[in-house]
Image (cartoon, rainbow, N blue to C red; front, side):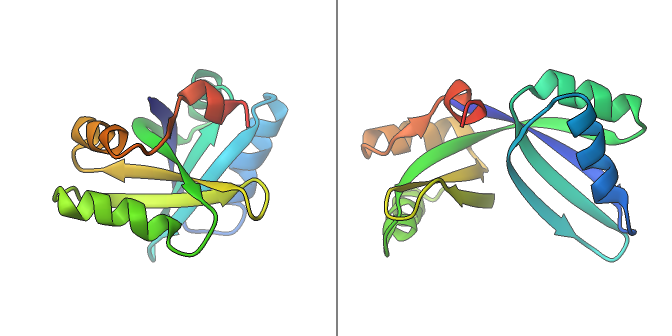
Length: 143
């Protein structure tokens, strides 16, 4: 039920994001989803890729600081209220969203939202009890 995500800490300067993309491209690693957050001095690039271990290795070998965390991928109806439904389920159980990002494969179908919750195991149980589909890592890596 969990998905492996890598986080890369980047200096906030021109070209660093291109370097990450180039390193991954040269290694044949495909990016499936991403999120970039920045501050004045640095950014955090969160990636879901088709080969987490290979990505982590080639990035570390290229001098990047890389971490690995577990997140969950939730299938959401791509319609008004789809996200609100999931967030309300979490709110009712006092589960906090640390961060999230989303992608849509085709409009009108389902979207996939990547969540990092403060209580990941409890969140998985709650989502399953609510009948909300959680994707397996292999499903997300293969998208």
